[in-house]
Image (tube, rainbow, N blue to C red; front, side, top):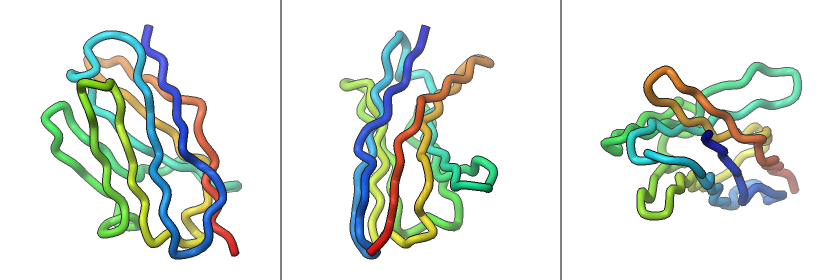
Length: 115
């Protein structure tokens, strides 16, 4: 059974940075496509970024040029580096893992961008 645990969220001022981490427990992390999604109050959950098993990346337009997704297969961890944060980035950020029709979600970590 796969478990995903996010960390690194918090309160940051506009223009600041945060790095989110998602620890994957289970087997075959290297085979999974990993992703970050977010959900703001009253909104649907939306894609932020994904990274394939081969480390190909994809970003939503909202985060292009500001966010970077990466993975460390030795540590079974995926990261989301977020720079130049804006108030509209405020949301709960969720980690996602998918492989072979199996999809898993973490519990989420709150990111609040406010002065």
